[in-house]
Length: 321
Ligand code: 3HB
Image (tube, rainbow, N blue to C red; front, side):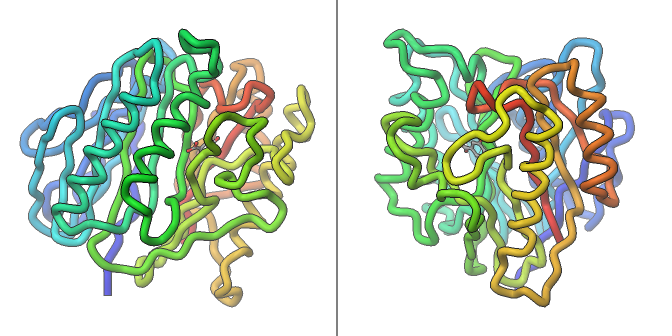
């Protein structure tokens, strides 16, 4: 039976929560005002990601370990693992074309996780600078990124299908990513019956579809990891230009995922949410909506960043229990 400890959010470094199991954290993701490659500080894997605007407090996402932690660095990626779980973090600086560099970095991370025995990747985050701009060939950066990630996943056929994910704009220039994997524990991926699976999107959305599942659970972990979710039905963006309506469709999609588990009796409840808002002018509307419609025991965190499709105004991800 696997013990999985949920991420814990804190508002700033000064209020970092005390470690909950008495061992070092597996990794800390610094959601702040700088981006850089993964680093090891006092034996802890850290990844600084540029996700908050100047003058706004960031937060630290801590992944808690369940045993002694070992950190390994290889090339542009680093992993931390504790015998049960692994976090891999990577950073690719700005490129004129992204696919090759992303394929290499992801392939390196996946190979390292495989070698160490953590073959089951179940959740990943990708923070993409200039996400809606074009690369030197005129291809949108997000679509270019999707090509590289898909090629890395082609190389190692994903055992349980593609993991749940977030692919979101950042305020930096490069692409930062991290993923979580387990040594054991069967992964079950869920899809939203109201959406075409992202990995089956038609090629109107780019040369390779985005490789991710809408949500994932792991046997014994008692957690549902919900991917970045937005105002998409079928494969189309709904309510272009209307933040209130996009929020309603996003909420409905989140609720569909909470109900999508075969284990219907289970009744998943959202515990943590991260909210990405394209325009700062919409922040208060979004905050009010989230408080009223998506209550969670821990405060949501809000980031003012671009979203993978230029017509999406808001995206919400979560962890449910
Ligand atoms: C992704 O490409 O990983 C992704 C993008 C999204 C939402 C979730 C995942 O907009």
